Amino acid sequence: MDVHLRELRYFVAVAEELNVTRASGRLFVSQPALSKQLRTLERQLGFPLFDRVHGGMALTRQGRALLPFARELLGRWNAGVEAARAAAPSGTLVVGMQTAVGRGIQQETLRGFRAAMPGWELSLRLVNWTDPSAGLADGGSDVAFVWLPAVAGVETRVLAVERRFVALADSHPLAGREEIPFDELRDEAFIALPAEAGPLRDFWLARDARDDDPVIAATASTADETFEGVTGGLGVALIAEGNASLYSRPGVVYRPVSGLPPARLAVAWRRGDHRPQVRAFLDALP
Image (tube, rainbow, N blue to C red; front, side):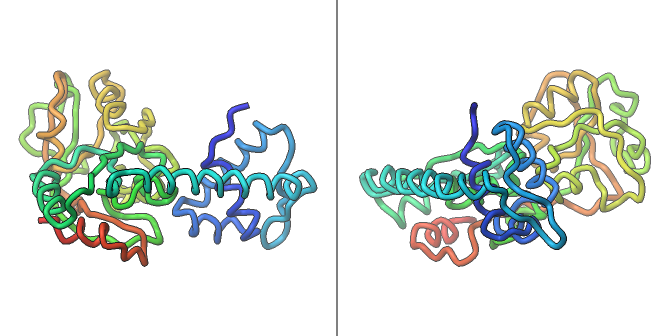
C-alpha cells in the first residue's frame, strides 16, 4: 500500500475541521479535488474514514484510530524537513513553478537575492498542475511563480500581463491564421489541466469567455504533457504569449487569440510569511 503524505494531510485536515469546505480552504485545494482524494485514500485502506452526515463529516471508528498516527507521521516529516534545511550552510529558499518563467525574471531575481542574502541558495522546484499552489500548500515551496487566479491563503504580486495564445498542431486548419477569434475555437477539443487545478483549469479553458461547456480531449499535469497532446493532434491548448517562445516544439504553432482577457503571471507566498529570506526574494524581483 502506497499512501502519500498529501493524502494523510488531507485526512488530518478534514478530521480536524469535520467539514470539507473549511478543510479545502485550509489546504488551498478545491472541494471536489479534496473529496476525490479522500475517496481514493479510503479505497487504498479498505475501510471508511468518515461518515457523511448532515452539515459535515464524522470520523468512523477506524478514522479515530488512525488520526493520531497520521498526525505523528506528518509532524515527524515536517520536523525532518526543517532539520534538513537547517543543515544547509546558511539556508535554501525553494521556488516553486509549474511552467518555465523566462522573461528575464529568474536571472535578475537570482542576482538580487544573492546580493541581499549572501550564503543563501535558491532551489527551483517544478510542481505539476495537480497542486495549483505550486508547492506553497504543503510547505515544499517558500515562494512560487503562479498563473492567476491563485489559490486561497496566499499573497500575490503580478509580474507580467500577456495575451492568451493557442497552441495548435501545425497541420490544424487554423494554423495558417495570423490571429484567431476565440469564437472559432469554442468547439475545438482542448487539452485541460487536471480537475485539482480548480479555477486555474477553468481559466485556461476560457470559461471566463464562454457560456457552454468546453470539449475536453485529454488532461495534462505538466507543460510537456500538454504539448505532447497538441503535437499528437488530440486537441488545442491556451497558453500565455511569453510561453510561446519558451516552449518551441516541432509540429506546434502558436497564434494569438482575440476576445479573451489577458493572462497574469505572479509571484505568490503564504499569507503572513514575513521571513527575511522571503522578503529578500520579493524585493529582488524586477
